[in-house]
Image (tube, rainbow, N blue to C red; front, side, top):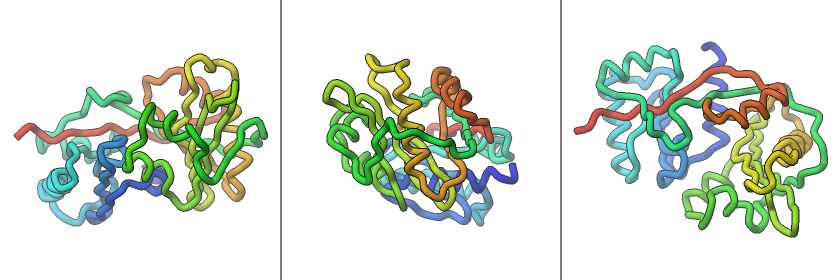
Length: 239
């Protein structure tokens, strides 16, 4: 567990919510409901107050920003027991799956088969979110200290995308998406390779993936990723 706080901090910094508030070492986050990561309390470290009081702050913050209260909790941490004792439960209905893993690997050699832009090209954001882009989605996807937008074009359109964000010597990767008709053609590999080349100064790659997303797991294992830890989203008891 000793490295977990560092990895989670990198993941959080690379995926900026619209609103963020510190509660001791916890992070309260809101972004119009777009993704669990940007709309949950990152429960790592000491909140600086009793657990019951801290969890009330999580619920109040969510209510203030019109989102459902969630806590992102590392699997196997003592916080799982703490939240369970206070009536919280795992969100088994989360659309991306109840459990996700944080994977990492040394930076690869990369290839130039994917283009990486400093601004999202036309169609990139729409492919990322699956339709019309909201202000919250645009903020999360385009904000960050150093963001790169990888894309692969076929048949005069974008058919694959991935987002990279540099945090110190980490390359955080997210939103690896390929249109269904173009899958299993090496496009995801090209996107990852393009980000490797783009990430000047980085030494390590980092990403999060749902544990039941088996095609993605196979892809990342092939590229040398290994698991650090897992996390789940927890919900408060119904009032």
